[in-house]
Length: 174
Image (cartoon, rainbow, N blue to C red; front, side, top):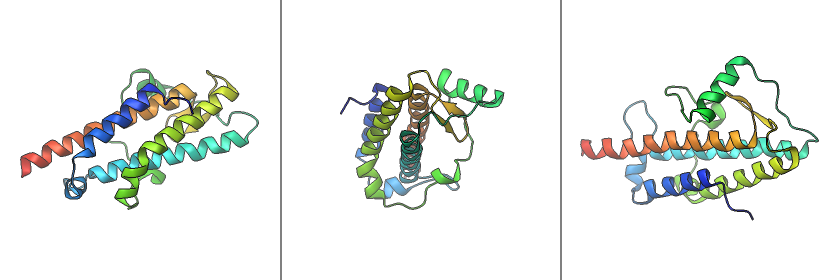
């Protein structure tokens, strides 16, 4: 199996490092109305599994499944994948909202899901081309393989910062 994309590999290592020393209680702590670290990880896990499912459909297809982007989607894609900026305050699409999956399973399998996601993106990239929009993101619209990876890297770093803030805020409340 090919090496994982370097952005995703770095994200994987950073997430693992951030939660490695956290207890179950620390992983579950959160301010009112906010997700805890375990829920953030579950959200990321669900985005990876959702992306894998989408790309599995693409593998079965004879051509890319991307639609034509709207101007709003082009702008959003540029902000996230061009400027590496994830806007705050957007509600996660329902399929990626935490559902109460077992924390231990998410912690154990999240890195493998990232690697599997990168592998299937690579498979489709090799099949349909490097620049071709492959599949629609529910908010950003059609993305190429590189844009899918960049989205997940930017999105993951956004949530990594939230996990690190939770750790800091928790320590100040103790």
